[in-house]
Length: 128
Image (cartoon, rainbow, N blue to C red):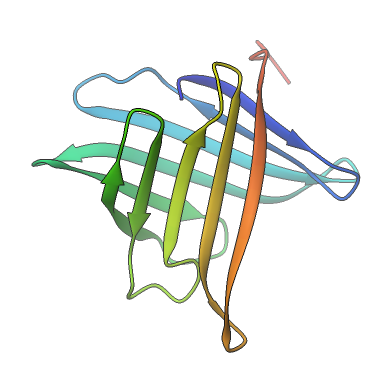
């Protein structure tokens, strides 16, 4: 996951950037742009906690939440926090060296909703 990732569509552009793992943790930042305006951002700490990983999400305008890993393979990881309203699960599935599907899911309006973010590896900009 280290490096820069982007999911671009006509509705929005989502960018994530992850630092290399050091000290048992990675740091991630994300931002969503619509029509040249920042509409959301998020800071994430991904850290080792015992035999599991903790995904500590700090999204703009919301209370932070910590999701614990419930499944880890060579190409995917799923985190869960059933006490959170939405999402209750966060996941990343690698699709080769330059493609990752990130997703969130949980109850919304009486049904389970899932939102996918199909990321492609992007060049990390030195300044933007």
